[in-house]
Every structure is written in C-alpha cells, then in structure tokens.
Image 1: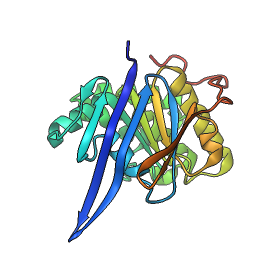
Image 2: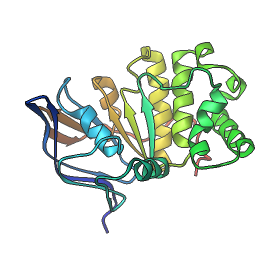
Image 3: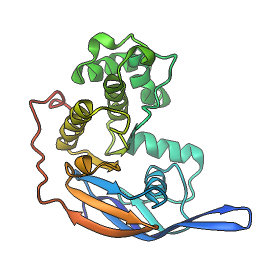
Length: 244
C-alpha cells in the first residue's frame, strides 16, 4: 500500500517575464511518506521555494503531476485550493506571518475562522494549543510584545490547530538565534512524532542534519536525495504528546 502523503512526478515550472521565460523546476520527482521529516536544501534560485509553493497549493505547475494524499492537485480555483490547504497543510514561515493587530490567541485561532468555527470555540481551542506550546500566559499579547522564539511557537500552534497532515516550514529558524532554533526544532520533532509529515526548507546544515531525509536542489533538479542515517526521532520530554 502506498503511504505517500506527497508525490510529485516530472514537475516543471517556468515564470515568464516579458519575452523571457525562466525555467525554475525541470522535471522534479519527489515522494514523501506520511510521518516523514524531510529537509530541502539548495542555493538561492535552485527552485526550493517554488517547489514548496506548489506543494502548498500556493502556485500552479506547468507540466507533470502533484498528488496530495492520493488526490491530484491541478489548476484549482482559489476557493478549492484554500479548502485543501486548510484541510491538509499547515505553514510555518521565517517571518512568522502573524497579524500584528491580533493577539496570540486570535492568530492561532485564524484557520478555524476560515472553517466557520464559532469565535468562542476557536478561541478555546487556540488556548489549548498555546498551553501545549508553553504560551498560555501570553495568549492576550500582541506579536510586537513577543520574542522571536515566542512568535514562532505561536506560528507553530497556528499551523497545528486545523490538524493538518503536512507542515511546510520555510526557513523556520532563519530569524532565530541558535538556542531558540534548537527549541523550535525540538517542537517540530515532537509534532513529527505524532505522525504529521514535515518538510523544512533550510540553508542551515545543522537544521537539515536533524531531519530524516535531506533533498538537495540545484538549478531546478534534484541533485541528491539521501536518507540521514544519523536521524533520531527521539524527543525531549514533550509538550505535545496529547496531540491527536
């Protein structure tokens, strides 16, 4: 039985700028299993952000095929794409992407707003997730009142609240110091241990070394796709063990 959560076959993507076409992805094949923790590395312009945007149903591809949980994803209307994102995918970004005028609880609750969950219920669930991530007492603070590590914990809580099957993390430690980066990676490993697949785009070898598989992109093709034999999915005493 195929337990792939993400399958990409001969994926091509070009961007047209006037009379010039930039061929960004040149026939990428990729298979990610349910529960895997994978990193994607590559220099700027290698195509890793484009690939992540296609997997996250934020962008379309030109040729090839993309299957999410066995469903072919192609040329969806924005409404349908948003519905799939909300059901299957959580996002964590380098810049946190928190709404500045909403407090931590409201930011975490946002995905449930789009699922038409009542305000009282979604705020209650958001508080539960903030508690799991050690931020319950910061629930009513604005992002401007939080440290970088706290903001990323809020972003992780927001990514988890709709119980996704996949979390896409784009440079999740890029704006953090080394100690906070380690804490964020421990949290992501705990999340992964609950069965959620995690794909991390990173420039940092230390981050990639903590994932199960390291995929390197170069000029729009996969240069290497290696199992990390040093990977350990053991986590420290957890804050998320009751998840799922």
